[in-house]
Length: 444
Ligand code: NDP
Image (cartoon, rainbow, N blue to C red):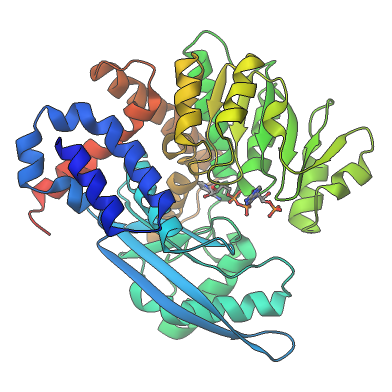
């Protein structure tokens, strides 16, 4: 049996009931075959694949807090410190009822390669809780965040592990988490990113993942003789990534006609009204039915359906496995040209294969959504320097990073004889840098 297959079997056997983690490992290892098989004995002897698929550390903890009725609630907290070969662990915190150890491990594993692709010195980690922020008062959110940090602070620090936001964690939650960290440790340091501008945050961090996604997509299209200008685009999600992907697409002259949330989706033939979407989601924290109520010419549909719309470019920006084989077939039947992932692993393995086999340009999230973590690393630099850079400076660095990521994954796909396979290109380019650092640092 090949070394890659041995390790895949081992990961599945040793991590039962973690399907998302298996999926992420399978996607990465499958595309590394060409690299591993060229030097299989060395990789096997050094157990490099066992090491890279096993977290350096996984911390599981109890998060007790008191709700507004005086009832004690208990949630599960997680922080997986996956790989620190190229820098301190870096990766977001997710608050969503679906969170479990397998989800955090899949996200942490992906983060290793994503962070490597940014070209910045950051290792891979991820964390979160099965706490559901929906419908909670600000006081309940604060009580949860303070309790979560009261345990987490023992394991993080500006030079060890620097968490950020993810689903369910925005500026409000980062503020509460940071306040509690500072209160316990007495340190005013860049231990979290995504902070408010008045206490060490970076300009453009809020927009970075969505903007970065569109910068990379535009570069991809330009290298294929076209651009975002004039394209019709579908976006899923209506959160941090989706909103700023829509905003930047429209700034570059595209028309985005859809967005969605966990209960329904909008089709707006005029192009999504970003100001209205921000008001509904960022200010009122309401459902997309309120978008429809404010703009009656738009259509609102319950359930899933964004991928049934005819578009040139599709940007999935909600959550994992939201674009399946049937969705891929619908997109291809409608002539989609490019699919670039804003979310982490939103496309199933079968859907990815189908899109690639049908000539659709496909860029995986670990490359196309890396703008968020890259700008987080820029926030860390500013915190270390005790300086704040201008929006133009951060935005231009972000754009350069995204353009470089595209060329990096494109070059890797060509070098290994898989031109245009950006999944392979991203995995190979991300892997080689990390594995090189791991080898240099010995058996640790
Ligand atoms: P948000 O919580 O801001 O938004 C998530 C959006 O997706 C919301 O509109 C939410 O709906 C919707 N959503 C969540 N779960 C589901 C579901 N099961 N079915 C349908 N819709 C769903 O999160 P972000 O925008 O920050 O993150 C989105 C994705 O991007 C995630 O995969 C995240 O890991 C990834 N990502 C985020 C980065 C960042 O900087 N924020 C960086 C890199 C990747 P509702 O409004 O109803 O809650």
